[in-house]
Structure formats: C-alpha cells, structure tokens
Length: 400
Image (cartoon, rainbow, N blue to C red):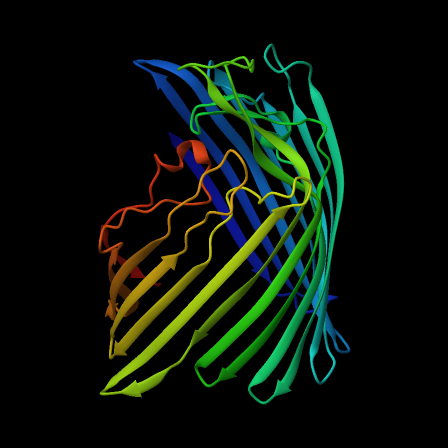
C-alpha cells in the first residue's frame, strides 16, 4: 500500500471589504494498493484527486452573521486486475453553501443551505458494459434554534432536508468484493438519497458541569442500503451453490425511518486534593426499512459509557467502561451480534520541553482482552473481524 497526502490551509483577515475572514483549505491525495496472488500482482486499486474549500465570513449585518463558501472535489478511481469489481470512475462535485445565524435576544436562530452538482462517471469495460454518466443536482437545507429556558437551561431544535448523490460503489459495483467475501451489485439507475430529519435537545450547564439529552428522527423517501439478496452466486453473478459460491448483496433504494435518543453528562468537583470528573453517555437508534417492514442492516445497538477522570497537578488518570447491547433486530439474511463490555485505562502528564507545551500519554484499551464484534460490519466478515484486543500504547505530543 502507498498513500501520499498534501494539505494546505490559509486564513486571511482583510482590513476592509465585505468579508471579515477568508479561509482556504486544499487537499491532494494519491492512494494505491496492490493485492498479491502468491508472488504475482493480482489487482491494483488506486485513487487520485484533490479537494478545495473556501469559506468567507462576512461582517455582521445588524443581528445577522454567518459564512458563505464553495467546495469542489475531483477524484479518479481505478481497479485493474482479476479481482476488480468496480469499473474505472471519475467523481466530480461542486457545492455552494451558506450558514447564517441571527441573535434575537432571547435565543439564536440559524439557517443553512447547500446546492451541489455531482457527476459520477463510469468508463465501463468488458465486465461492466458501456460507459455511463450520471448527473445529480442536490439541495440541502436546515433551520435551527437555541432558546434559553432558565439561567442554566436551554433547549435546541433543528429541522433539515438533505440530499446525497450515490457513490461510485453504490452505482457501478458488479463483482466479488474479496474484502467482504460477497458479490456486491450496484444499481446505475439509483436516484439521490433524500431524507428529512428533526431533533430536539434539552441542555444544562453550570460552571464546568453540563448535561444534554436529545431525541431525533429521520425519514427517508429514498435511502441507499446494501441488502442481502438471500441467494448465493458465482463470480459471474449466476445463482450457484458449493464452495465457490458467495452471498449476493445489492445496493437498493428503499424508504426508511430512523429514530432514537442521545444522552451525555459530566460533573466536575474537587475532593482530597484532586479534581474529579465523572461522566456518562448513552445512545440508541432504531432503524426500519419501510419498504419491507424489516430492520435496516448493520445498525449499532444501544450503547452506554461510564468514565471517571482524576486530575492533580500535571497528571490526569482516567478509567472508562463502555458497554454495547446485543443487536438482534436484524433483517433476513443477517445474524444477531452479542453485546460486550470493554474497560479502557489511561494516564497523561503535561510538562514542558525547551519551553514548549508537551503531553505524554499511556493508554491500555480493552484491558480485560474481551472478545467483541461490531454489529455495523457486514455479516459475511463480522465473525472474522473482531474489535481490537488488549492494546497498550504510549506517545508524546509537543505543541509549538
């Protein structure tokens, strides 16, 4: 594998004009990996391209303040060899966006909009048929508000309508994906993914202590999902059985609904010469394919985390317990994933090196070496790709 990246960022604050601040971000990426068949190169995958993002923050217009910007990217993907399951493609995106907020005294109201043009082109080929060009014009909009209820309490609400263009995998994949052990089949006729979401949250903050509880719901008129076809095929996509057959998965556009809740809280207090910070978080998502009535595949189960940090002088010690419940709400063709509990430990120390701020850390993740599996992994490889076992790591960071 070979990966090279170049990044550049700049910021300019002009003395006059309509804008108070301009930010520019540039990124270039060149990636390639070769999959070997013994000592021979079987397939070469590569991706090359770049991205530009320009943001301009304008001077306040009365109570109105915000940013406008443009984002552009161009990436070429190619796969050459026997295991190529996606044709050579080019993806180009150009988006214009704006985010504005207004302080109304009792609260803040914000609104955002993004208009995007996305081109996702396939070069085709012997295995993939004729070249195909897809064009998408996308619009996304949001409206939000944060309103105080009392000195320490506030409530926030957001409403958004979003569109997303299908990726080149979702459109043009057609072959055995060796990494997942499945035949993945895209749909070149897919339309843009489209959904509407709403969330509501109650927040409390007093000094360094804070808490937040929220609920959310999203309804998709078109949701792009990788679903099991409940059939096995050979390397040419023909129905088959035996040792050489693999399960068939298709990228489908379905109606879907997701809803759930999130909670997080932390409290800070001093005792016995230490500063203690107990914290807790939890989240849950329920996702349904409204076209079939089944659950959507690969959805994370309910999760909860309890942590305690203790700081004294330059030292901070932290212990964390993370639990994920059993995920048995799965569609046909998928299987349940057992729950698990992980224990993570960490220690950090701040100090100076030649007058520069430095941080040393020591982390022990999954201290009990618990065997656990990720419910969001595709079912064909979930049992072969457990979460990382016990891992000890240390590092030094110097800011200058």
